[in-house]
Image (cartoon, rainbow over all chains, first blue to last red; front, side, top):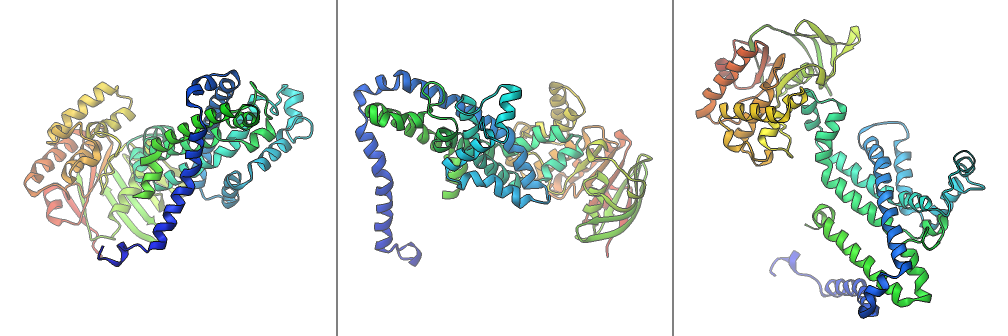
Length: 266
Length: 209
């Protein structure tokens, strides 16, 4: 306690304490409202089960889709110098700062059945309708989750020393082999962090989903939409499902602790 | 045979080189910044030649005027990198076996060969250790094995003995020479240690400036 740097002013301590209380209170409040005796019954209710199933399925699909689109994007942003790179990066980050509802409206503008840019084509030629369908949920979730994956992978790709890929090339590894056997293993921590962040974001998606895919129980109603819907009709169910979503979020944090958050903290 | 006649350019560095290496071990001696590493990188295909021609075993692999550039993975060159560049996510033996796998050797056979060669170079006891846990000397020996194991048609060694302690240098040196003779290929050794080159090489080129 002798060093000046280790002496903390009282107002800082009080401020920090207030911050902790501010963040903890809603969680405690939520736990307080959970009816523990009927928790299991609530979570196994048809509407809740449907919502969980749709949420799980759509969020996993969205994460895979985000990976398929995000990995090449991250690669180009990290390693290629091309005209319009700043524009592409801004475009990638946009869904992160955009109000999700606006994202949903924009998706309607692109894929809406009657007035969307591509919606009519998809409907006429392929008989595919994204709005008010499970695919709509997946598209909406991918749209908001993609930036998290791209950011994480781009950072990872930048921090990889290319000397390992060079060594692999000299030893006879072609582009694809180099990527699979050298780049990917080196990228693993950022890949896992990015996938978990993207998946968590997809799982929590609300605004873009309800706007673009609607809120149809058993078809497009995800867990967050179900919580919102149930809050009036069945608050006990809403709190039970909320509790489960908190538990999942905590699990994601625990899974990430050494990879992203812990790294910044230490 | 390695033959470089041209301008090696890396970033702002640029220097004319004229080197012909037959079936021998040629040492390149020079201070830091004389472009020794850059020449090796150019021969390996990691940097393109600015001007001139580069041939390995009578085949043009880099000749800007002729519009020829053979990718590094097609040049079949064995190289010890100055910082070893072992893959950090692999064990020593998997690192050593990598060039064999790239040449289509089955995994079990490749690992067996790699393990035998690691033993020759005195690092069998750390074969299963992950690369980042190896000492500088151990890691350098693994890098040497990795450069020689895949039957390369030319071998480039960048400060190959710098991390190996004085007492075991002669042994490692003899093994390197033995393998180069067995392969019957051209080799270039780069070092700023003149005595080291005298011990290992059949001929020395001076690039001090």
